[in-house]
Length: 340
Image 1 (tube, rainbow, N blue to C red):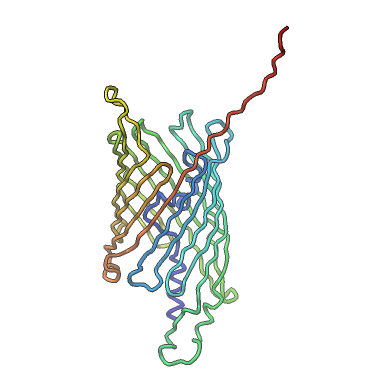
Image 2 (cartoon, rainbow, N blue to C red; image 1 turned 135 degrees about the vertical axis):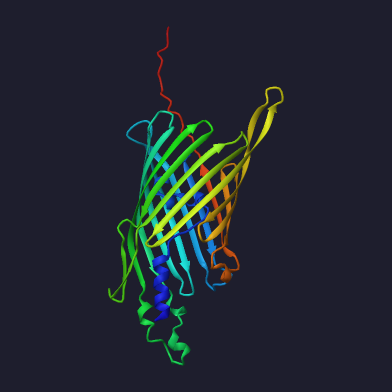
């Protein structure tokens, strides 16, 4: 029965959780879908946590694709759409979620130069949760019981699908030519679905998750910029707050010594440090090469859990790329009558 309680707690607490949110924006807030300059954005992130003291560590995989697909009701409006696939698993029972979600967003430019933009997003899809009962070991088996445990039947049929719905809101404000601010709020698991097993005798509720984010980016020079970031999540009685400071460096080459014109190179580097309150110190390294974006993050545990994982919390690897395909201009054919 102890095994059952632990597995249920894992299911209640399990939701995608990352440090480098730049590679999981469409998951964190549906209003981020289609919020970029380009034709198609492809991206993904992998996270592994507690791998040094748990036989089957927490693993998260997320892939996404999104695009600003069409114009909106006005010239300064546009519509975004996307698709994301996720896999989240944890523990010896291989408690896992497999999800596929579609996304739609509507972006409203409040002025012709897009200095102020409001975006609304909606996600819908299907999530499957399951465990692997073959890996379960119960207390009565340690006490000399022969054969399968009498408690095994509680988790043998733990496998169910549920429909999930998420909504989000985002506001972007360009303060000046060298600074900008954005903030967002999202509510995941809007309908609060239930997973039922043992013929409906046991229910596993999926609580609403509230995500908040805010960032302020400022250029210190042509080369350097700083971005303080705040992320907050609430799921049931669990809270997650992260404060980060990201530093970015752009490389230039001078084409004319007299005019001192700077031409940007194809690559940038970024470094960051953060703190997840009462949990971990975060270290972030990233870079941009042409249209490719790379990122690596490491969590150093500083909570009481550090005595078990020896300060090694988690690592992440992320990658994304924006593809741009300029639209071909429409050429209007004209027929000229020859003059005689």
